[in-house]
Length: 142
Image (cartoon, rainbow, N blue to C red; front, side):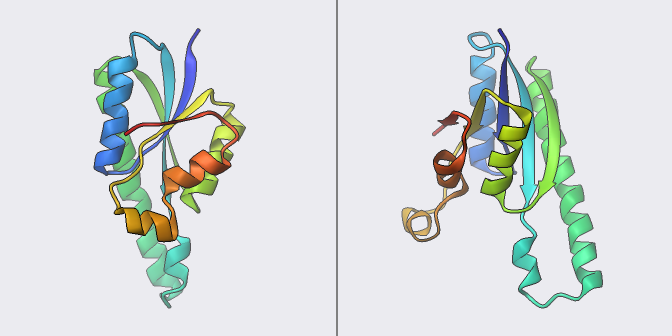
């Protein structure tokens, strides 16, 4: 049985740690992977950018994210793990949970970022919010 796994990624050490785990586990857990990168634009709207500036920032951000997620897909492909990619916009935790539900994944594999404990306590981390809010099983990788 092949397990369907959703893996939220970015260009962080945490994302690389998750991909390394998948490569190590590919023989024990046959899986197909969806790599998801979420571009959080809501923060830009509050900084007074003009519409033309927002559109330029949006286009550049999406282009950058597409390159990052494709680089991760190629890394998994080289290791023999089948993966596809998605780039979405919105609140990262909400989008991750929504995509997990709509895709009917078996697991979400996520690794917390390396933000400090105080930052996570005050604002929460995306990984913590996913663990709390997602209806799919979540594997937190440290």
